[in-house]
Length: 386
Image 1 (tube, rainbow, N blue to C red):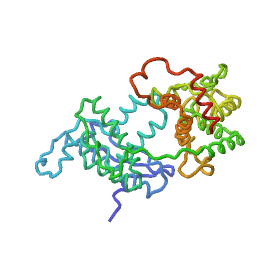
Image 2 (spheres, rainbow, N blue to C red):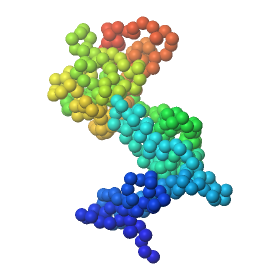
Image 3 (tube, one colour):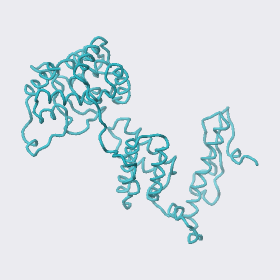
Image 4 (cartoon, helix red, strand yellow):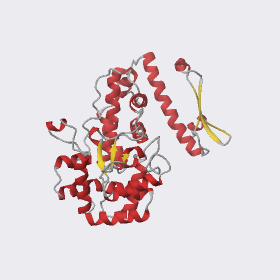
């Protein structure tokens, strides 16, 4: 039996192209009578596979157009109403919904935000097809869950992926005045609790001292960033996105004024805070200010366009892997900060202020907070006690 796909491909300058004539009855919906596009491959087998996928997609598109044009005289015989729903829906396709969402939400966001959206779109369309967003069903959501699970992804990862999909659907359904789309909500992912926080081990005090000494010996962008986090408990992106104007040296107590920048957002309003510079962090920031040739303290990991948190995490955790107990990562210093402050009986509200954690209580909304000398006193005591 002949290969039906071969008629849709041709070769030009050693690159395969896809071509297909547009049927007359749907041609009014296009600006040409034939589709031609590069498959960007010189492999015939890959070209045939991609052409088959594109041909199937066109068949589905044309079916939807024809249903809209002619109606469906056989609708009453259908066991599944999916095709009818596709034909009747006026909702945007998921790919269009993604574009609407990004247009409204991507300004000022890091590249990782867009990457996560693109990844969610690709995975959903691969598993379920690019359909009007109000035609997806609970069965589709379960199929997507199963497709993720077959790839060996953790339930927490699947949970995050579904969060992205729901964010897109919820936003676009409101913008397009569509009924609420709930099929991706409450999908069963397993008996374990995906929202349970992962147990991260704090770095033991003796290991903190050892790592700080090795950071000073190496004196690189990577080790200065590790040392900064080790005695401030900052989140990785918070520290990596620092610039020289965030640092105050000309006062009695040197400190960081942590605030959002266009290249690095902060997690929430509580993340904006004053962080006294003590111990290894004071050394690291001083060296970073002296050695950086531009405004960014850690130019290997941040520039005016983006803060490369993922890259930094990989490099920092790789450097630390041979120097800290199993289960400890760069974020473990943040857990250590809370333990170290508790050990010196630092008041809980000051601990929360220093770490940028949510501060409870009605009274916290009043006053201007603790003065820098009080914060510095506790951080200095913590560093000296380690």
